[in-house]
Image (cartoon, rainbow, N blue to C red):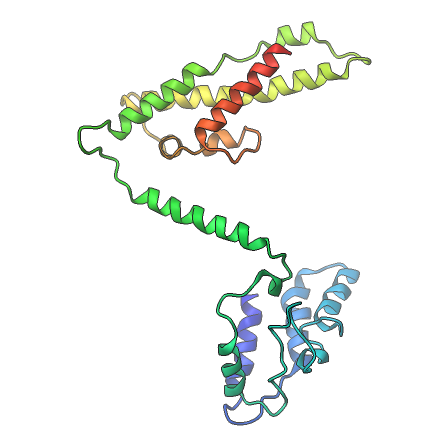
Length: 265
């Protein structure tokens, strides 16, 4: 994409600011479709599809219809080329681009309007993460320090979690049978949650030792402490865990409910 934009910029820079702007559509289509993107496409049908997307008369960005007055790049018709003609100079086109909205709606990129919700939420998360990074580690006003808070949170999580499931007993009590397919599901789920529990137990043990200075505080353990302090699920837990977007406290509560359900099973 960056190379294609640079090539378009090159054609614009080489054109005269006062003379009518001539658009070499065939050259641009060949550079973008055959060279920039086509070089990564090995299948002949995929290459044909790629070129059709660029030059299709119904909506291709480099088709002849793109420069006609009735053509619109979005369903709302806000983005169009009705004010651009063969007699337009480079300055005329730049002035037209400056008149367009600075913030584009998702429809310009072929997305639904609800895509703004995901974008705004992601920007909010990035802003809050940046704010959390600016806070200091020391306490003020006689409160608990960050190390004391982390030790307390880690101890609470460690004490609330049950030990690992006994897979040998589970396999003996619920053997794999033709008419009892749920036995296999139960044993497989026990294996999955044992992996998660073992990671949580070991990481909390190592983190507690690192806080007391008995072992080295590695990068993974430091990231674990930062995530727990910010109320997030640590990355090393997410690698073995089920998908979850909840904060740390709600995640632990849900995990306990899942483990209790497997124990009652």
